[in-house]
Image 1 (cartoon, helix red, strand yellow):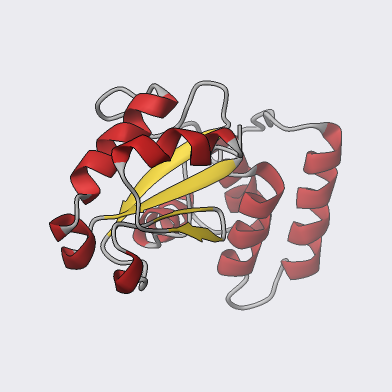
Image 2: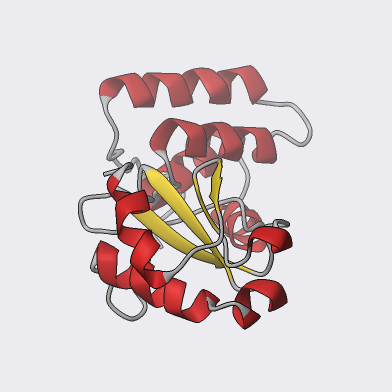
Length: 165
């Protein structure tokens, strides 16, 4: 990790950089500023690039190790770019019993995701598996962004995902 006082260029646009500077300025010197600044930074960039974490560390005068600790502790933060559409495939008991594994495999196949890959190279989709969506009566289920799709079969996956492409 570079020296925390090293200036590291961002990967964002000038508009994103300016928005981050404004957020940091609004929170600088406030107790508990780390979380709201990280949340805003992720909103701005879509994830938290290393360079942004270093800049937040520098500007808030918080050790980068502490920033990284917060980011890796909370599941809401992401260190890698995410797709425009987030697909959450339920793997809970009701969905499992009704064929969730086949649906998950169909999602991976449709999106062209290899083992261990979660985001498509074009950044259109990110696939997450979740323990429960809370729609057990519609099992098996997945969500795309905030829309729930239920009573799925492997054959029904493609046409649903096509709507978001």
